Length: 155
Image 1 (tube, rainbow, N blue to C red):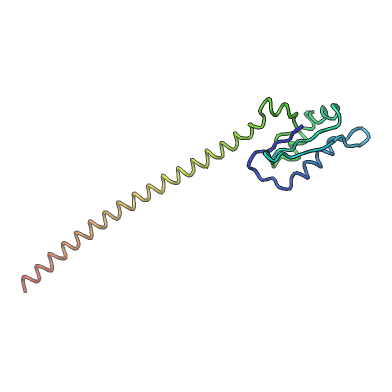
Image 2: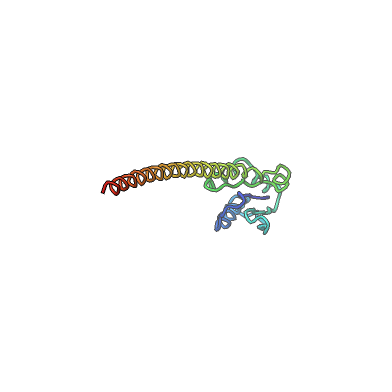
């Protein structure tokens, strides 16, 4: 079985909570845990792979009730509830969270483009303002120069 989280998220410290949840969910009728072991793939650090001791325990872990409990317990985290590893690979459920990441990246890029456009507009406005000031200053210097020449020639 497998639990997946969105790649490139930093859920440090949550592994213990997930493992505790797995142990609590995998108790048999006599309150003995049916959880056998777990591992975290180095290539996919946000993936917890775990094994249960029986198919009955596996079926229980795959039930809707357990999935709903997982979603309620870890609602603040973007993770996929327990699935068979085969299902995760075959149906590519690990790709589902990427849509949220892609949307966030697209929105961020759009915000940067909008901000860049606004800054370019401000820059162009400043350029026109500087040009206008240069023209006005040139006109003032020209007028002042003519006035000085007029005073100089009349003296």
